[in-house]
Image: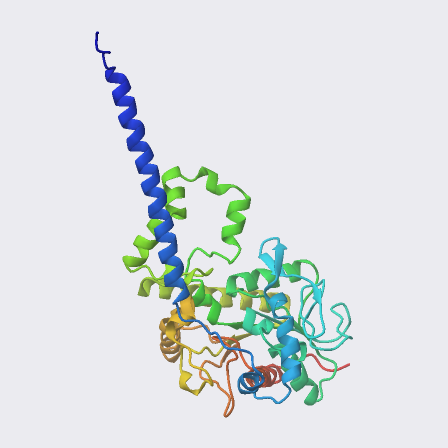
Length: 388
């Protein structure tokens, strides 16, 4: 009986198929194992996780009105809700709640029903990120609300203050938001910009916003990305290798970016400074005043041991960039290298007693009040249009 002759091409095809199959299985196992390892590592990353017991709420808010802040927190998920908006990429989503209200015009109310953007009389517009918008506090406890209270207490009951703070905004988006108001025929008498924290959080020049990734995907720009780069971007094996190689951003998984060098820090400072100069030039040309607030941050000057609950550096994520940027800003200011016109330097400000931060970076009601009062004093010193 003749033995069947083997086919060399068949053997080659079988061998290749086995190798490919083993490779696919091996890659799948490696991806699964790497993804599991990343989940464990990310779960161990320190975060600001406090159980919202009545006693803890009293400590964080310096208040016995626990029920009020439980209600505020019940609407907390709305305080990061944004929708697409041309040029600035996103703005706060309109919402009408008991303690959190965003109007169709894009501002958060100050706890009053009679605010009217179209009404006659002096207006103050406040721009900024989530600290200006007021994460974790009620409508009448934000920086803007406290500015208005202080102005009215001084006798300027004719002044309206509008809170145009938006989560994740930094100076570039705020400048564009102001320009959109101006081109639509809405002009403030004073425009206030509360900045510092988010400019360093987004340590990327040219500018990249929090919505950049989703807009990139929606416009299918990634489809033009080389397939190898696309796969590496999505690969858990690559992400784990980057982490083991010292890339801290893998664990953070936030919208910002770390400053990799002192040159990156300098570029962010330059961006903030140039935005202020452009805003000030616009204000001078169009007949309103600009006030630039260098806001307090927990990574500069503030003693974090004063907090009722400890916060480790790892929990601050990209906000640790400001720990490198603020000392440079302070040095440049002392040397006369920063734009000083209309600058209100509050970097070292903190409450004399009580808690300053209700989470990693957002201000307590007491701190919002103190900042608001300082801003109101600066506005009054700079001069408002006379009362009718």
